[in-house]
Image (cartoon, rainbow, N blue to C red; front, side, top):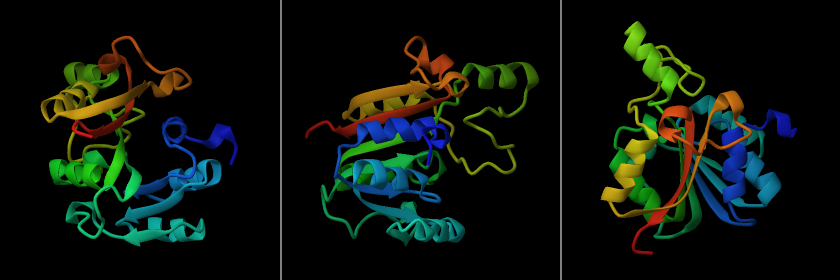
Amino acid sequence: MDDETIRFDHRIIAELVAPRASVLDLGCGAGELLSLLVREKEIQGQGIEIDDRAIYACVARGLNVFHGDIDSGLAEYGDKSFDYVILNQSLQQVWQVEAVLRDALRVGKKVIVGFPNFAYYRARVQLFFLGKTPVTGALPYQWYETPNLHFLSIRDFTNYCRTRKIRIERRICLDFLDASRPVVVFPNLRAQNAVFLISNGGT
């Protein structure tokens, strides 16, 4: 796989993960990110995915993936049994956001969360001037086909972590129009996507 074909959020996540770490990818899709981490970071990776076709794609890549629903919980995993738990582009698609995050923070020493920023300025313009559900690079779906159940912003997630004493160790905000450089100034307005590295505040 050439660097040109690797998604920028996947590249950012790969930079956050330590070599030879243990990783649990929740909602791993077809396994592109897990495959990248296995290849470049030599991780011990495991995925959980609900879509059968995506699981077949993971198996074809030689990945260890279980069929499961993230909302059902992670009771079978012990505390801190993985170095990293990843929720990339999947948190906004679960029903029980708080329960899923609590479980991820329990099972993982660190948790990586990536999501589209609903407060991106183009989304605001479409909603305000056109009166339509926004469609952007990070939110590419029409309202009737979107898998997203929750529409959150970078500020929303930052405030959520603060009120629940979740430590934000890193925050990288990206604009897919120029994803080669993180957005530093007014990220809640200018970034289409965000990646957070978080951990329990008490650990």
